[in-house]
Length: 592
Image (cartoon, rainbow, N blue to C red; front, side):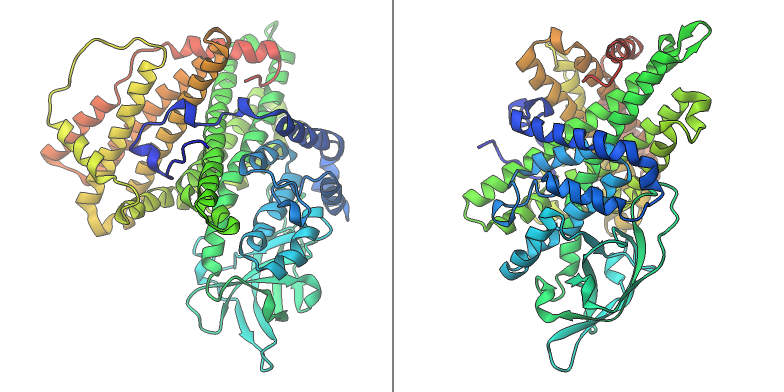
């Protein structure tokens, strides 16, 4: 069993490359599952994207049926319920591979994730026996009803009510839900409502056939036009009391924990979508001729291609590292005697910080890549007949889905600080050590010129910068820190940059140990590019944060410390990008 680390621990400890998983380690069976997903998209989804976007009646349901027949809805479902019982990282790989499927990817992810997992993780035996096999096969399709007109990010403020009838046999649900993915064809709704005057939500498994359910027409959306998105109304909807999911008032906890999974899975889907967009951009740059040359010959285009590939490679490194951490934590919890269902939830909850980081960074990298893809296509990028049109529109929702990126940035810092207060993470000791270091004279000695020394030194200093700024903000602002959202988002940008940069360093270090330095030249270049950029981002975010709450001699001292912690060895990024772009252009696809 691999070493099981704590969620969020990366900011205060060093990780060995031997303790991380990298995508190059997927085994033959997992790669076959990935290939099945890719073949399904190529045969069933990509040729029908126009029909899907027009919401041709019955088409999405038939695609879901076919996916169910291939087992794509059952990868992580236990064998006892008709699934394959694969680990979390395998389900991440499926999400990644399907991520290039535009609206279909949204429908499948909503069904297999937020639609199915609440029952799998929180349902009792009777509920799981009744619902999971049919959800795993695709016979029944699922949706998730949390958001309301006045309850978006503040989900627990929802007004939907559930009242037990006089006979004590059914809860009668009344209320309105909106932005419900798969709403138009779902057989099962996971519905969140407050029982009587409860403070917190409860969750219910509601079958469409129970009655009392009506819907508005399909929403007209900017993107993901082919996914069914409806407002759903519950009008005296009778739900058998045995369909209460988990315990009364446990709904908000269910929503939060399921959203942790949804966040990291969204990041994985963004990786697959980014890869597809990048392939299109590389192909087009090799075909488009201007001034007598393919535009892939021009430095401005090569910059874009290399930067797109570097950012996606880095997020991919972080996503599968976190996915394996979740698997390792699950194995350790089960080995310690914990119930399998509780271990699934606890292992994901433990890495909620990493899930939020991957959601934010994955969705923003996808937006960056699609935007640059449009630019590489030039005028054709603005044409609805070229592939960038759909990619550009479809990408934008991901910064809103599963909690806005602003909310997730706030959560990254909030969750770390809460764990520190509970004694789960010792942030105080290293933060105090960094504060002491500011008063000391820097040590000088022989420079380590080994392969990863410069990047590891830079990473170590970035962690110090994050601890210095976060620790100072807590001390200075204390109880008002939660209101200083700009400062919290600055700190989150540093924390996330540290995690992704460390992930790409560890991935490349492990890859070099497997294949040798010469075979990993492109990956080494991407690692160095990303670390340089993480240093720059940390400096800018740190300076903005410090200028927001510190002043006088204290500010000057910490700015000096920030400059010390964001020094990095000189590196010719331009030439590195040229080398990365050359590999992409020669392969005519994303090849890392």
